[in-house]
Amino acid sequence: MRKRTWYVLACVLSGGLLAVISSVSAVAAGAPGSLDQTFGNGGKVLTDLGVGGGVASDAALQSNGDIVVSGGFGLARYLPSGQLDTSFGQRAVAPVGFAFDGDSGTAVAIQPDGKIIWVGSQGNPNFTPGGTFEFAVARFNSNGTPDSGFGAGGTASTEFFSPPLAGAKEFAHAVLVQPDGKILVGGSARQGQNRFAPIQGAIARFTPMAAWTPASAPAGRSCPPATAASPRWA
Image (spheres, one colour):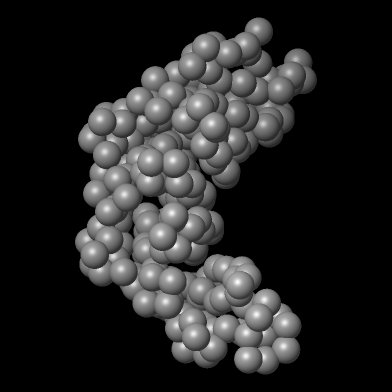
C-alpha cells in the first residue's frame, strides 16, 4: 500500500496567498522521498487565494482523504488529487468572519463526526479596535457551512484575565479534539496595561456545544503560574 505524507507550505506574494501543497509518496515512480507525480502538477499545487488571504498555517485530513487547509482567509479544501474542492464552502473556501477586528486563523482539527474546528484570535469587543485580542473558535459542518449549533452562530471566544484590561494579547495556536469530543485550545496570553507582564502558556477547553467545562481555573481556562508582575488564576 502506498504511504503518503502531505506537506502544506505557503508564501505571500503581492498581498495575496500562494498556498503550496505537496505530497511525498514513499512508494512512487522515483526514489523514496521524491514528489508524488500523481498529485497536482508534478507533486505540487499552487493556489492564489486572493489579496488579504494570509498565510496557510495548518492542515488536516478528512476521513475520505480531502485536505482542509487553515489560514487567515478561513478554510480551503482540496481533493486528494490536489484540485480545489468547489463543493466546499463558497467555491472551495469557507471564510471565517469573526465579529471583531484583527481576526486570524492558526490551526484546524477534524472531529470524529466530520465537523471542522478552526481556532485563532479576534479583537476583544470591549476595547478600542486594534490592540486587545482574545481566543476565538469556529466550527463548520463537513461541507464548509458554519455550524449554527456551536456557540453563537458557529463561533465562540474567551479572554483569560479578570478583569480584562486593554492591551491584552491572547492568541490561540493549536487545537486538539479529545476522545470525549471536548475541544482543547492552546496558545499564549499576556495581560494588558503592564509592560512587564510575562507571556504565559494558555489553555482553554470547550464542550462540543461551546460551553466552558469545569477545570482547575475559572470557566475552563488555565494559565501557568505567573510572576508577581502579572495576575494569574488562583
